Image 1 (cartoon, rainbow, N blue to C red):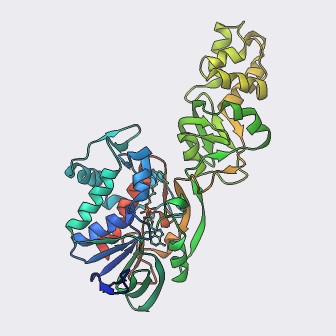
Image 2: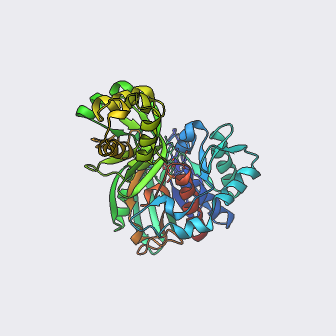
Length: 407
Ligand code: FDA
């Protein structure tokens, strides 16, 4: 395969020959190139952006939460929850950690198995590029793909801003729709549809939720305030911090549950996670009968939040005045504070895109299309979405590796 680049002077330049073209030099695309290159395949990775791995660079607050040591298939959302199993089993967090250690990159566990670089996510991009170079894989940026045409069995023709080229294996690793300013595009979905694949409805995931009307008015001036909660919706729940924002709610517990939330659903937020609210209130009533509910709650919740809760959602009076039935009602609100989000902040701030290329059309061991031999889809473009905490990169590494073993 040959790429022809038209240099500024108008002269055509032959760039390289390759067996495999990977579209997208992000986490999944680079890992695929490394795995395929290690098998002696000649690989070319094309990206329309001006630099590779932009999402890796911005991830984890600049320190890249590159995996999660506790990764299991249960940490992923997909219409087919079994699809991710094979790839995750064949390329594990330990495999990626071994690569990180081989490159002398220092890292630490922040919480819940989440591994971050001590210094910078730039080290992860550097590592991937070094690994790719070591196996002879070539990476080209500033390369827009104008069209992909099937020419015959395992034969694709690509028209790009740098020329036309043919290849036998094409791997689509163009990611999801989140953060359009970082190069995200719907190109992978477009290609999937072009080749007869089903694309499941996409929506923003791991994203702050917005409130409107009374709930927003009641909480808005508490923006910046954070508390430990357990947020639940549609059978899932996450215990972590919740942050009040100017537009609604955010923080890890809310980002996690946002992936399970659908418009119209309400969230149930346990404001005393790990406590039996009724028993806790009864104990407080015995110990501090003269104290008002707002004061008692202010001992375990941020004081301003406790105050607002008692102004807007709960009747506040001295603890001794509550009957057992009234106390049970207060306990029920504290254990499942109902919040109805009006929406999400959308792809502008979402970490991931839910939905995407339907796994029913792909092989779970090779990520190859079931009806177009040689065509593979990997990473976030596929309908597999991880929780917050390094799981999405682990899926990118694992699915990239699976395709790299097969192309
Ligand atoms: P990715 O988006 O990484 O790469 C796709 C590539 O394709 C890009 O380089 C893009 O330029 C290119 N491309 C797109 N369209 C193209 C076209 N038409 N032609 C050519 N190239 C094209 N996950 C995690 O596990 N830990 C973390 O700490 C974080 N943190 C985080 C922070 C923020 C702000 C975001 C937005 C996301 C995260 N994530 C995360 C999620 C993680 O970044 C994401 O799941 C992976 O990067 C997905 O890897 P992919 O390779 O599939 O897509």
